[in-house]
View 1 (cartoon, rainbow, N blue to C red):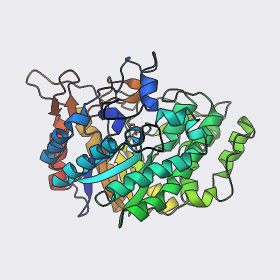
View 2: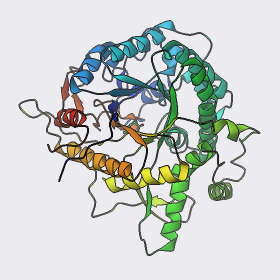
View 3: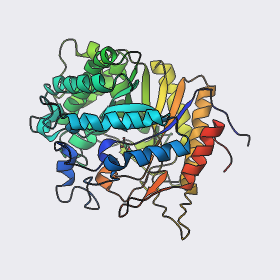
Length: 450
Ligand code: FCB
């Protein structure tokens, strides 16, 4: 096969998030977040771990930036911990928290790495959760206050902003499934949370534009392709439509000015009467604030079967390969997803803000991490992305999840998504074979033979 070349100026990078890597959970005035509370609660995290230390990135950020530079990264997507800036969620600003991100951004710029800042990657200040968190509409003003302070301080240097990471996960896995913080199990709460996340996104966009001249603003969604388990069965096709509505259209439609999807509103109202009662006059206009790009996190597709209830059931495909997370490897769906997003919603630009694979492949005797499986996973998805570009999709960059192994939420440290190995005892970092290969891909501006 010949090597593929990506468009000139295509951005290659990696991504992380604050709670997953920083550690220093209670240092320099940081307040408690819902993830501190959740992970300190027995039985919530599979391996009983927490993010108290994680990758100790808070103290080692310079070393991490140096490694990124040595690998030739163009960009780095990180998130800001709200509770470092506002320990109580609003009101008094903690300057030391702002200083940390200020220093990180300067280190990145010195290294020639473009910072992409995510404002909310799930670590809500616990003080706000105590007031109802994202269920309480008052949070929209608190988020606006936080965004104003951060974008004023960093906006002269950070020019790429992501308001939220995966509101579907924050809303549903955190509030309906109870598997993420804050650990609630109520679909009604989850829909309310999702609405306020979207509303706060819309409220944040003009604030960022005001404080950060010539910046680009977007939101990151976890998106998937829903396929029927049995293509001969019309009920499974309907289940696929429902899954698409639940995970994709529920967020994309209002963001692109189409209101919530009518089929989904009807089915949720049937299952949970009067649950969609949080929309106020003008909300949909705020949510539909024009953005500059759509961030897409893609890991796997959803193959679904019809059930009695409103939620389809996901099934495993016997003939497919799966990663350690038990996520099906399906790069073709990435091409399909990008095309669909491009034609249905017409985003000005798309970034893949996360894509990667969990494999717990450890260093061998020579200390080398031969993660061929991850390398092949990435190659397949780079090729799929290239195909979408050929189809006319305005894909402008690709962020591999993750720069390094880290705290994988409810899974703890067992799942390793990094292209860099982290020894959590010694905090040693070892670039895996996938990282060394990725470095060459960046050089060549496209996937190369390994
Ligand atoms: C995404 C999250 C990210 C990471 C990957 C594996 O849902 O945004 O923080 O956990 O999954």
